[in-house]
Amino acid sequence: MPAIAPLRGIRYSPSVVRRMDHVVTPPYDVISPAAQAVLYRRSSYNFIRIVYGRGRATDRPGRDRYTRARDTFQTWLREGVLRMEAVPACYPYRQRFLHDGRSFDRWGMIALIRLGEPAIFRHEDTYATPKQDRFQLLQAVQANLSPIFGLVDGPDQAYRALLTRSAARPPLASIRDGDVQHDLWRITHPAVIQRLQAVLEAKAMLIADGHHRYESALAYRDTLRQQHPSFTASHPANFMLAYLAAFDAHDPGILPTHRVFGDLAGWSLDRLAASPVVSVARVADEPAMRVVLDRWPDAARPALGCYAGPGQWAVVSPAQPEPSVRLDVEVLHRVIVPRCLAPAEPAITYTHVWEDAVRQVEQGLGQVAWYLRPLTVEQLLRCVRDGRRLPQKSTYFIPKPLSGLVVHRLTPAGAPSRRIAMGGARSKDLALATR
Image 1 (tube, rainbow, N blue to C red):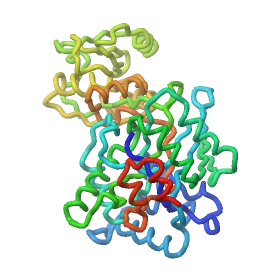
Image 2 (image 1 turned 90 degrees about the vertical axis):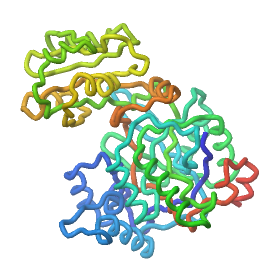
Image 3 (image 1 turned 120 degrees about the vertical axis):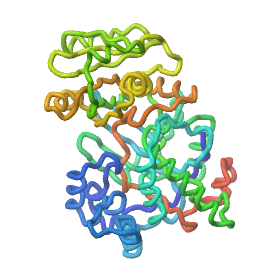
Image 4 (image 1 turned 180 degrees about the horizontal axis):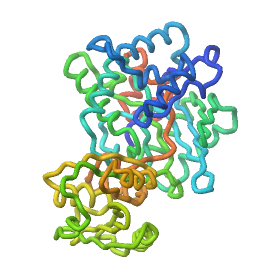
């Protein structure tokens, strides 16, 4: 496991903000313009103003949404809207939610992880534009504003059992967000933090959500290291805020992200079927497509569904097994796009609702919709252990941790204790450092 450290979290002051549900936000990358407007109206202290502020027509370098985020953050700290806690803490965090009529409790904690350690596994490719956006925000605000979402590997229940003891007392924050109940606690006792570190020590962490933020944080750390000779391993920019969720094989948290392709000159299902690198099995309708995929027998040749307009349904798979293509999303982006559609570069839209993908094709907003089956955590772990990265938006984990619950400041005033940060610190060092 990467080195884990408590932090002096920055949180909303309860004397100023009475209702946390009015100020927290989802992660920035799932906020639509309409949702952004709703969050702006919800409260003048809503965290949207910092984590994903509006752009303006008059924006220019040095006076833009990044500098406005910095100014808002500093103003709220100065005025006591946000305040840094007096002692380092880890923050147990429970999400209660429903999925397919069943209720689930996901337990984890918000804490710091050391950036760049080999026990942190990434499973998705990233793009330059969102990384540049988050990097500019880091430069301006100098804080981790949202925890990345990590899954802690391992079937044992020791980590979860330690966290659930927090529920014996009232939470610091209790927020209902749609169908999800979010509850946050705080642990400051060194011996308890020590036990949590010991339980996590031999485990790996899979980044479920937050690849762009993680890589932006790496770039920010490296930039500081190059620019400042005095930069040391105890600087807080070596660490990042993370929600470390206990792995549960029954957790339904991964939804598929379907694709709609457009801007394909000369596209047709017949043309795809003529390609020697894929096998196209036409089916009568959507139910038949789902039945074929549900019963698909060949793990060496994954398959995905295809809808190209009224009456044009199919199941598509590689013509021959390929060791580097084991998942549906790899078939699409590693076989179909480069070998069947090239030189065309499709315009891609993403949706988690298959009916929306079908509707886009029927309304002429795209030419073909691709149906992907949900991945399992076991498939993802196998993928990263093989050293493979999946295309962007291969997974969509639900529910996501909220932004605005805890902030980690990247200036030395927010640094974890030296002995913890040099970490991987063992328990007696932690106990001494946090007294």
